[in-house]
Image 1 (cartoon, rainbow, N blue to C red):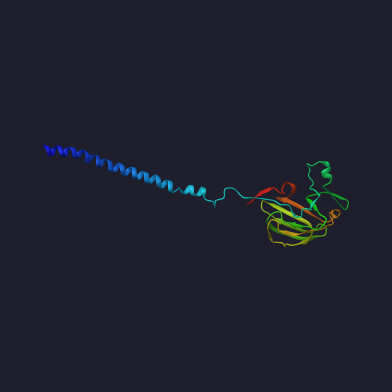
Image 2: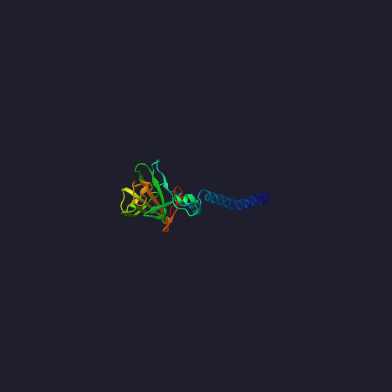
Length: 207
């Protein structure tokens, strides 16, 4: 009878041991799984924090077509919405013909360096009897900048220029002879003449 009593006391302990082993094992595996998920982020998380993936398109400000601080505006762009006096001062007179100014004329006492307002490709370099030496540059965002009345040229057709690169120097032309030394500057968007004042020193989005 004594041996039977001992067996009865041992049996429940053995059963409890067998029941606890799988429970402890399951808890351990769950803990390891959670730890692994914390230590090893998912593929989606890695892409979100990846610095090589652009979030927004970078922007760049359009600069003035000159760097000389002595340069001022001699004649402004003809704005249909401007005051009458401003419009009157934006008229070009040549051979008894009155024309609306399609750009801005920058003047200075001495010849000054003319620079590209943005990076781009030179699409035109020519010398015109009326306009003087001319450079045209095609930029992104369907913009084209035109530089007229130059006395010197530093670029040729097909050149890729950087923003601020010197294109030449200001000079004179027959169309605006009364302005003396100056740069006639124009901007075209999608082939249409636009007011440069609405673009200069403004940010544009790079494509």
